[in-house]
Image (cartoon, rainbow over all chains, first blue to last red; front, side):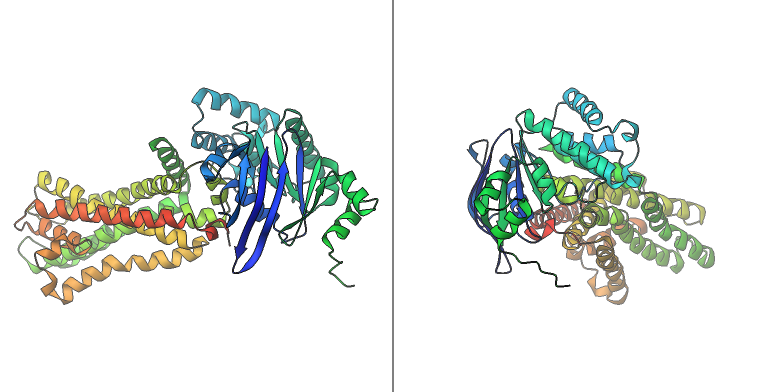
Length: 243
Length: 261
């Protein structure tokens, strides 16, 4: 479980995230929904401990963790781009991150085999990742995020640039992880994806919380039939391209 | 602590060795000095007593100090600026590993390449001097330990300086620009000694760069040698390298480090 309370962050005097509070329960997929530049990525990066919040607190599994390393021990994350090592094989990439997390050798070996099997990486596991397709890179990066069986998983727009079969297999994997009790926080600006996956939606506009609830609740609250209409009403953002 | 540091170092070494283009470039830089000095030695036909020998020794010491800087340069560029450019630094920072350990691991790898470059350079010079007819008055039992204690720390300092610069840069190309300039530092020290012989004072032998240049010349010319000089010089250079490393680790805590190009 992840609880965020009064989180704030500025860049060059501009509020990227302002007094943001929400919680993401275990066994549920919580979607962070917002336009480009709304503050989703900054929020995830603060939870992951790579950016330092200027205000607020972050608690993971009911443990208030001011120390970013303590948070990172309880998390798995796939942020922004895949960022895998091109001169290492997929398996070597996974082994490297497992060793960094000080996983015992035998456990690590078993987990790597398990992740390779779950993600269907078998045929490419021993190939250097330099020539990998976007989907193959994403699978390797996802493997890296779930290798240590984290109870909390953060994903920042993981379906960007993926083809339909890969998106479907990713959705299916996330549902399986959710059903096993993992707390998943998932950021996206693709409404169909959020509706298809998320049990709870946190709408962010200009770095602040605009609304939160299930997709159905948000539609009911705004008296709309689609999540897209609810999102526009909640964020108060007009269409910004005039044709 | 050491476990995570060595995991990072091992990965960086493997990654560096698989970058064939960069390995070939480092090999070329390490052997460039012996090649040039070898060609010059054919022209000047040096003996122990003539002026040609001292010119070759001066040239050798400059090339050797440069080799300490170029051996790990490509790895230093790739390991932070390159990771930032390819966006693999962010996933690394997501792991529960203190930034100092990350920098230490990368520094160990860069240092290994720098020391290998330096060793190859010295080996090349040994071959050149042996085949050129120069009979240097150097006992290997004195030369090798003195080089390890006094000169090799310069490779460690070069590695930490290059890593620091790499943390400032957002891309390999940017890092390449700055790191190429750094190579002029040992070159300029060599020039300084040529144009300002007054700099050859005893206390200068304890200063990083200047000390290494003077030590090499002293060893090759068979001058009077005191162990205190390479020991103090080595300790000072390593201390400086560790201080620079702390600054580099501190830079990894800055928010901007997670943003790529």
